[in-house]
Image (cartoon, rainbow, N blue to C red; front, side, top):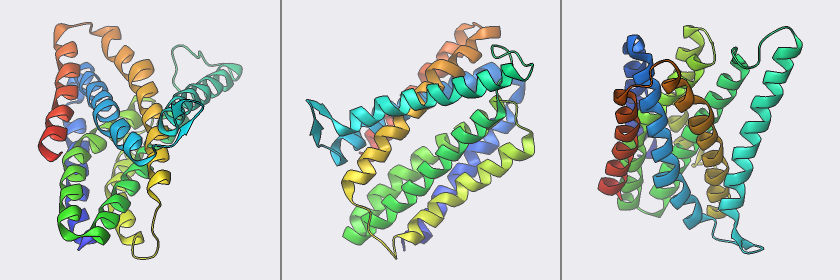
Length: 242
């Protein structure tokens, strides 16, 4: 049952990626929307779930928040190291983005989608009502996952075929994750810690890369409205599915 329901996440992820491809002539709007979607996913979906699942406190701070900061710093470190390596080989670190960053970020999105599938499977282990509720939430935000996976991969200069490849991998990941729960059980604190770490990575990409790029050549009001709309859409999804 969990794998069958995860097919909905597969289709919704592909729909998000297809939408990102079709609006390439409005790239600044795509990036503005992607930044808003990522901000909404992090602040309104991932962090609350992470804090709920990994509620252990270390020196006065929840583990989920510590890993959130660690994820942000990790993404910054990786991006700086790759940019410095590119500059050492004759590139301009301020104007040429390392394709590896996009692939790494997209790979993290694939990992997150796999964990979405694990969450569906684990919820069905609790009961069908719980499983359907979690599946609805996952399917609803997987449109944003597909949209962001294609956008992030393309933003860093990767060829379209690579972006499509990462999109397909992201779409298949929930199916694999749901299937895997037939063989193991993921402890809730581990899942919460992962969500916190991944949230930090996403926030860095949204705030330091995608949104500045969206407003660099087109500092238009429409771009800002797309960012607000993206965050508001996730708020709506969370409110409906919560």
